[in-house]
Image (cartoon, rainbow, N blue to C red):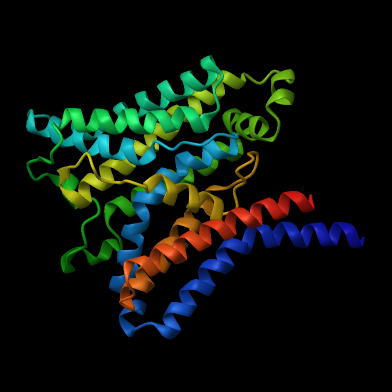
Length: 322
């Protein structure tokens, strides 16, 4: 009886660990930080700051669970903002511009998946090349400068809520993140694609022997990750209100860190949507707390880097114990 009880306790601890870490980080800054950190307005700001990383982390969760990785997220977000601005300037409707950005990122994801599966090159190398390729495409499309765009309702997706719209609690972009998170969690838990994703990440060879279409599933997963990256690009455009080919440099590191902090394994086969969102929230809370306490940027970068290293070290330690 002791072994099952211990295993059950360890599973609960692994599941609740990110939530407990989020609570501990928030309470720490609530105690040592200024009173403004605990205000409702700051909580809204944290939610807005989490949306961009959170949306991209949903796609990265699928990719990492399958045993892959994507280093081109930041470049794809920059390309999405440029596509939106250029499309709006050509007279397209805001919804059409957003769809064009998402479709562009989906195409980038599908190309990445095809290169990985057809050339049989490790995802790290392929996505590293795509990171440079997509960033170059964004700079070429924008002629290496920011692209101004007319004001539309896209600008309000992550804007701070005015007093007359406080009943919404958070901006529409945050609600979009919540909806996408529910859909992604349902996909992982209740669909064949979700089961195949976990099977490939656990052991691709065994999954192939069991009849799982490994290559096709990987291409679909990178396409889905591209869709979530495109939505993150729409949110980035909402914050900037311009197309900027130089934006989101290093965003992929924040996204990967959020997924790993949330309990996903870089070896594949393990991860959750809730954990990834909690990981993104932990990073946003830390940055907000540091900013409220007027800490310099280099301190924030050291803290974030230490958290990433600790999360990866914890992941490797858990696998050695197994």
